[in-house]
Length: 539
Image 1: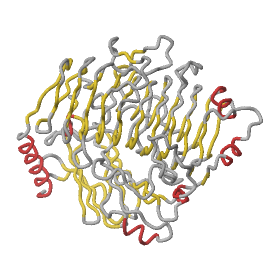
Image 2: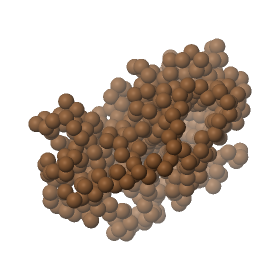
Image 3: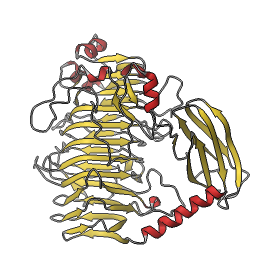
Image 4: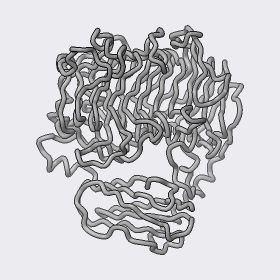
């Protein structure tokens, strides 16, 4: 009981510390140049628009919360700018109101909307202009003729628990680009726990580097309506138990448009150095049935993909979908080159494929490699969700076989490895990814020693729940484990686990049908570490 009281004291102390900052609630339009400073925190209430001709500047280290129940979103209209420039040690954080110290509710995907940037770069809609999905506002339009349009700079920014639905099939993503131009700078961004896609590009020419899509619900990276940008160093990490129940979840999803037309410009982004870590760590792993493909490339899109690693996706690494998509593949108008697919049932597959075309030969002749198991890729620890280490081990095949990226001033030409990482961990400091040191693929004892002994605990799912929920924890090393549920008085409600467990991931179901509505606390103790979280029973 003393431990639970200590936990509650920590919460109270955090509330006191928060009071030193002033909270500023923001709603409506930002119609004059404005700066948000790190000595305040900001609460977005509903749709907040940055108007045409206006610049919103956000200082490094500033936290912005989305107000629950308002679909809070920051929308930068055509001609407006968002300059949110954090640092590796002081990132800017957009997050759920429920992450405030002292909150009695755990944050969850879809607690608020997200960030939407709208620009004047080309899209392939016949009129040259479109209304962005997710807001329902006819003034939220995007598209034009300026390929170098500038919507500002986002650097060292985290976007947490976004992705709320405005209406069915009309959702707000974590970070949305509508006709955003190449004058915009996007670098070092993490979208975590998004209720829809982590990132989606609707046309435009914006170039992006160092993007993380972490534990999202729908797709990691979604491209539509003639997006032509360049991208390098992207990481996608999936939660095996969380996927899109209204559709399917993939690493990439790409369309020219919703009908698969040949409208110009075609969706034809250029990707280099991507790692997509799927949900399936081992052949026996339990995953959500809605997980599909590492890449679902369809509806006449023409993606140009190089030096990319797809690991742990259950069905197919690359799925070419539709008559035109497959014809363009055969004709060399899009490609997957110098890549690796590991752990998927097949490297490549298609619907409406070209008769007589040898897809397996296409895959290997483009200097790609396929392994039927994840271990062959020899990444350090990719499936440990709270510490997903995508760095290649010494001797990993991902360290060789990559091509030299284009020397056009945007791409890093030294990144001749396959995937998002060579030896450098560019996630360190600013993101919530906590990678462990790179290890030798031939020294498993050393590999085990360098994995943190601290266990991983994910939020129970669902939460709130009625009447049952699943609490998941992962042990990198075997040892004694205790999982206990308490009420808010610190009284033990039940002990769900108490004993020795081998290393691995455990899903523990708790049926609370005999208990009343309220907040409960669960605590996991293992390997001399402990962690406590809240969950809500609603009846």
